[in-house]
Image (tube, rainbow, N blue to C red):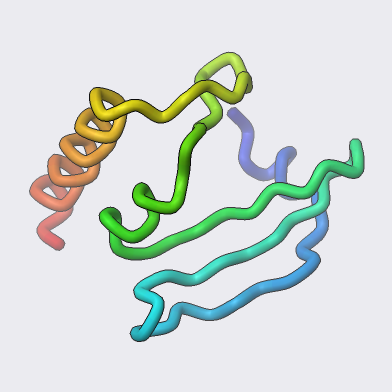
Length: 85
């Protein structure tokens, strides 16, 4: 995915800075097709607990089951290890 192209085709509607109380930050983005996507950044357990679906590699929304949650948590833990966070 070319992130520069994706960014150029969207506009930020609303941004909520990271909150220690919520343990996350949010941004709502309107795409050129008028769809609104909300992106969260924060504590993995908080973010994953709020979702029931995710967008796969084919840009399809699919159910977020326990196995996939485990996969995402492990991937995030591995990133922390690699980058020393």
